[in-house]
Image 1 (spheres, rainbow, N blue to C red):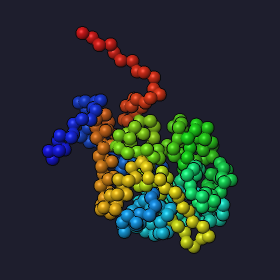
Image 2 (cartoon, rainbow, N blue to C red):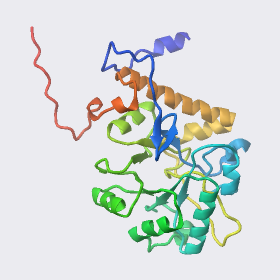
Image 3 (cartoon, rainbow, N blue to C red):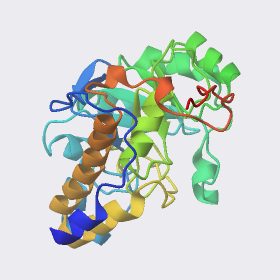
Image 4 (spheres, rainbow, N blue to C red):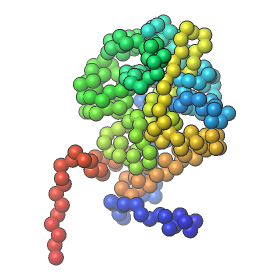
Length: 294
């Protein structure tokens, strides 16, 4: 308690004398209500960290549990990450199984940089915008396109019928935008929302957005993702190793508390009150300041 007192109180507080006793962090993601705009991407080899690893709702493509087993672990909003194989029959079967298991959306990964040679060899290099439309013919789940970083690709994603985009530069408010990676503190969440993001995805040990896609031992192929330990990855996987599910919950609670504190210090009681005016970026024009008076 004494250390906490000494270490606290150094945060910036741009707004004062605003009642922030009740802060609402709830939002909707593709129409589904969530308690905060912070979601978790998957990680590989969770069971190597803790036996409870496969029970979390962040099961990776490397996991040995099926999509049905993941869905049976309990209620939750699950998205299905998709790398498109050369064998489209396998892709179609995986998508249908995910939909039948109750997954709520497809996250189509359009960028494959950094994939291991074996994994890259399984991916269909002919993937194009027409495949976004093809996916819509085999599933009723909304399609998110991951890997968008230019305004031109944003426009093409919208034209192709994408329900949202992940990792984006400019979407002009026409589809929800999600930030994938680069989040280490609750202040980062606040900055992302101030810049226009609808939510952020934090990885346990990867840069990939997706949720709960698992190895399909019955098919001729299976999806594997080369994960990279960035974002807030190590604290979460370390907490899993130390305390299992309870440890992961603790880390997420810390991130939530930091985000809530940032909202309070900024005078925001709801996510709608977080605006572009709350932050200053390197590319902003200098803001005029009133001249001091004696």
